Amino acid sequence: MPALVLGPMLRYVDASSASIWVETDAPCSVSVVADGHAHDSRTFTVHGHHYAIVDLVGLTADVESYAVELDGERVWPEEGRPPSRIRLLPPEGPRRMAFGSCRTSVPHDAAHVLTHGEDVLRAYGGHLMTADDDEWPDLLLLLGDQVYADSPSPEMLEFIRARRDDEPRGEIADYEEYAELYRQAWSDPEIRWLLSTVPTAMIFDDHDLRDDWNTSHTWREQMAATSWWRRRVISGLGAYWIYQHLGNLSPAEREAEPLLRILREGTGDGGGALDAFADKADADTSSTRWSYARDLGHTRLIMIDTRCARQLTPGDRRMLDPVEWQWLVDEVGKPADRLVIGSSIPFLLPEGVHSVQNWNEALCDGRWGRVVARLSERFRQAVDLEHWAAFRRSFDDLARLLVRVGKPTLVLSGDVHYSYVAKANAGRIHQIVCSPIRNPLSPLLRWANVITQFGVATLVGGWLARSARIPRPPFRWRVTDGPWFQNALATLTFPDRATWYQSSGNTIKEIASVQIT
Ligand SMILES: [Fe+2]
Image (cartoon, rainbow, N blue to C red; front, side, top):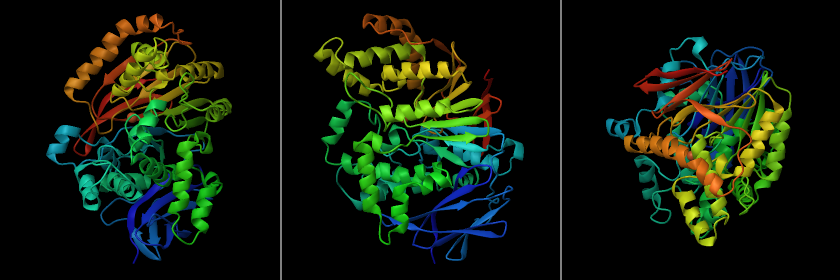
């Protein structure tokens, strides 16, 4: 009898449809039973793993409890857990969204709580099991580093060591290991239940593939010279497509995906087709668009791929290649009362750090000669100078675009391992950062960050940028709240109150709450 390996995960939900993703341990038919109606799909197979995504369309009311059947046998809900329900998106848009980034999935024992803190997403799941309806989010945004392919947990390392003894040691190598990495990340009972009943929208950051992913052309050359990177990037992007990307899409968008049609119509294992797709996505950024946009009532959500769509030509590097940039311009211009932009890496850094990244980019491009360029590239990789500021042309383009469009804009970000709010002094642009969910900086690094990012960089950043003749950004901004360094998950309650939570056991506790005006 087939069984669930992972899921069900409630992914795309709008005012009348919902999509549910599962991984099973054998090919089978998958039925989602909601309000007496069965919605069916068949699994497709990739690298020996079996997946289905079932669309429930034409829904007219919330579903109080859905069930999953594999070949007619009920496998979900699990005994002793609250029902998995489907709350449709209100036509006027979300009442509340939750968001965060950077979550390592290490064990929850005392030793790991000491090194990694508590898992706030897990605590949030536990909290929602008994929370009132008005506390529920309509959507959970996972803004990057959902899995750490470059620093696996002890259990994951055991899995790797039992299979092989070759490069890359202590890191994920192929699709099989990625599948296990995702299974471990999303199998805690509270997490699994949370993901079965709160819709999610996701985008990757570097660690889903590897630290510093696509920071520069030099970085790509260094990785290409290893024996193992090509297999890793093909597997990482393929697994991302299966585990994260497919559920980001509406049923109509997914139907239009040629790869999904190939996998569903094929009779054998579609691993080869997935690998070919992923290989092309890495080699030719314009062949695939990982970014996506959704209308959430009057709010337009735009999730930007700030990693894979990069153009890394030295001297003309851009966060988004021209095709992706034009897509963003079009999406930002569509009718909406407000924009919520998900960008795994922050757009508005502390101003001094912004200037340092501008300066480093100019030096990497040879402003002060070739020797300095080589040293600057090392510095870029060593201290993660890879945010929008390190792609100055793209930062300036986006800043001008958002001011020109003039809509209230909230940029939601993660990655930096502290949380804060920044406000631009032009347009109506705010940025809200929530990081990490579970991967805190050590106390020493917190102080180092405060001193360098909010102290030294503020003092010398502007001077460095001027010394390299870098033009001033189109507008100025300031950090109005934060930084907070503890593990956190944030919620955004419309209209526009952001609240950060930390956890203690299964309870969550407010860190800060800020009215965004
Ligand atoms: Fe990151």
